[in-house]
Length: 365
Image (cartoon, rainbow, N blue to C red):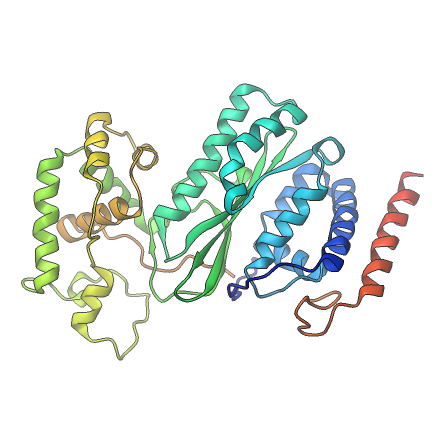
């Protein structure tokens, strides 16, 4: 049985104190020595790709259960203690500037894990496309700022990335696992953790399959014709004339809309055309004639605005609606950094680390 639920991740500033980081690193090292010994390298990254297990790991390491630092600090701690030569897997990327070094980190890990060039190319593609999907195909108002990739000696991988919504001051975490990804653009996630939104444009949903197909057809259309249709629809939305109501489109019966939202506001909420569309990207798409949605998504310059515009045209003109349902799916051992639900018990944390280390030594004997 799969466990589902939600976790609020408010944006918290500041840094973890050094006394806690030191203990987190020591405990994390011991925990993963046990995990790799018991479940193997693939078992370790499978656990990391489980959003609820990762949340529990954060709590076990005495970090916040309900903050953005749950992701960034824990991934940073793991990157500092997980040595590829010792554990059989390594970590690329991280928060902010570190996320932009993911590709060079993959090259460095490739040398340590002795991965072939073809496998490194696959890993780099997986890193780029997973970020592109969560930025452009899941339009939930969260901009990615953290991207960590866990890579094994056999080239299996997991991705944990996080986005922030500065207006609401919350974060959202996305989990991927290579062995579970059948298609990068359809139901690729192991799970998404965060505060549930009322409405999200989710083009990764199986419900959006028809919309994705029509989007590809539109991308192969002469851009001038597409621009004409786009401007006409934008004008209708702006003037609110000849625009059908949301009920007439019947696109999101499963989404509950707050009663205080007026009918005219509902149209603007769901059918707001992007102010700018990258027409150069669409001209490039026309020249390349993408065979599928993934190829379309990989075209340079295709971003959230272009993806949303074509999705709306697909629905309003051709009757192929995308999903508007939020894909979000979804415990303390030693207390929490902020003293919630109680202060960190340093002595117990140190004793637990020592017990794990001794157990490993005895197991080897």
